[in-house]
Length: 603
Ligand SMILES: [Zn+2]
Image 1 (spheres, rainbow, N blue to C red):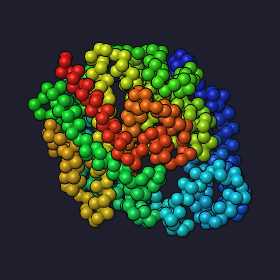
Image 2: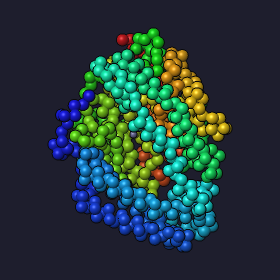
Image 3: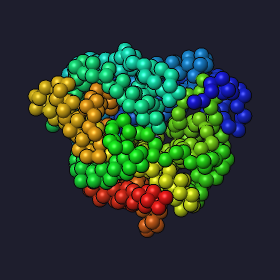
C-alpha cells in the first residue's frame, strides 16, 4: 500500500519529472483566449446549416470549418483535463474541465447537422461537387465513410425522434451503473492482515489476487452473495440494454446489432466469428495453462478464485526511471532509428509526468491532441511492471506522433480497433528482449507468466465475453426471455468449456454476467482480443526478422484514419479477415507455455 501521507505536493515534484504543458498554452490566459475562439468558430460553422447542398464551395468550406472547430476544441479540452489530472483537488482546473466539457456538448449539438446533410446528398450531386471543387478529394475517405451510412439514416423527423430518446435507450445501462457502483452494499470480509474490510468491486480486485487462499475465497463468496441476491434485477437491466441495441439496429435497417456495431468501423462480421472459432479450437492450450496453475499452487482442487493469484513473485529486478528509459530503448531498438528518435523526443522533452504526487490521477495513460505533443501520465514505481507500463504508453505515444505527423487532421486519429495493437506490440517486444537478456530463472518465469496471463486475460477472457454477448443479442432476437436462470446457465456452460476440467465450476461464477460492465458496451470487447492477438503476431514477425516487417509496421503507425482499419492491418501483414494471425498468436502462446513448463520442471 502506498502511504498517502508521504506523497509530495505537486509543487515539490522536481520539474524534470513533470510534463511541460506550457508547450500547449504558455498560461491559463492563453487557454481562455483560445476557448473564446472555439466558440466563435463554432458559430461560423453553424452558419452553414442548410447550405451544404447548395454549392461545392459551401460544402468544402463547411467541412473545413467543422474540422477546424473540433481541432481547436480538442486542444482546449486536453489542456484543461491534463492540468486537472496533475492534482484532481485543484478547483481552478476542475472549473476549466467543466467549462471545456460544456463547450464540447454545445459544439456537438450546434454542429450535429453537418454529417446528416452530407449523407443526404445524392451521388450525382456529390460527384458534381467534387468535380467543381477538387479540394474535396482531400476528404474522400471521410466522405465515403459517411455515405456508407446512407440507407441506415432515417428521414430527418424520424432521426430526431430517435436521437431525442437517447437517454431513454440508455436507462438500463445507467440503472446498472448506479446499482453496481454505489447502491449495492457488499459484506465485510477478512483481508491479508486479518482485519475486516468492506468489499467493493475495487477491493475485490485486490483481494482475489491474494496469496492467502482463505482471503480470496472469502472475497469471492462474499461478492457473489450480493449478485445472487440481486440477480433478477440485474437480468432486467441487462435485458433492457440488449433490447435497445437490437431495436436501434433494426430501426436503422441493419440485419442485427452486431452488424450495426461493426459497421461503424467497417469491420466484417467474420472477424468476430473467426475469433470465436479459433479460440474454441485452441482451448486445449488454456486447459494446459490452467493445469500448470493448479500444479504450481499445489492445490487438490483448483477453484475460480484461484485464477488471479500471481504464479510467480515480483522479481527483485528494479529500475529507476532513468534505467527504465534506457532499457525501454534497448528493447525497442529493433524498430529502427526513426522509431527510436521519437522515443527520444518523448523521453527527453518533458512529455512525461513521471511521479506520484498528492491528488494526482492514478494509473497511466498516453494522451494529447492533434496539435500537441503525445504526453504520458505515469505514477512511477521502480519495478518491472512499471517498465512494461512505460513501454506500453510509449507505444501509444509514438503511434500518435506518427499519425499526427503523417496525416491531415481529418485522418489524424485512430480507432480503438487499432489503438491497443501499437502498445501491446511494444510490450511483446520488451518480453522478447528481456527473455534474450535475463538469465535468472525467477525473472524468466515472471516474464513468461506475465505474457501468458496477459494472453489469458485478453484473448481468452474477452472472447469468452464476446461469445456470451453474442448469445444475449441473438437469444433476444429470437424472443427467448433472458431470465437470470437462462443467463446463469449459459454463462456457466461457456465458463466451464473455457477453463476445462482442471477447474471446479463454483456455482458463483455462473453469476459473473451480473457484474461485467462490458456487456453494456455493444460489441466492444472483441477488439481487445483481436488487438492482442495481432500484436503478438506482429511482434513475433519483427523479432524473427521477417522481411519488411518493421517497414510495414511503421506504415500502420502512420496511417491513422485514412483508410478502413482492416485494410491498414492487411498492409501491416496481418489479415484479420483470415484465421492465420490467430493461429500464429496461439503458436507464440504455446511456445511460451512450453518454456515456462520446462523452466519450472528443471527447478
Ligand atoms: Zn493502452
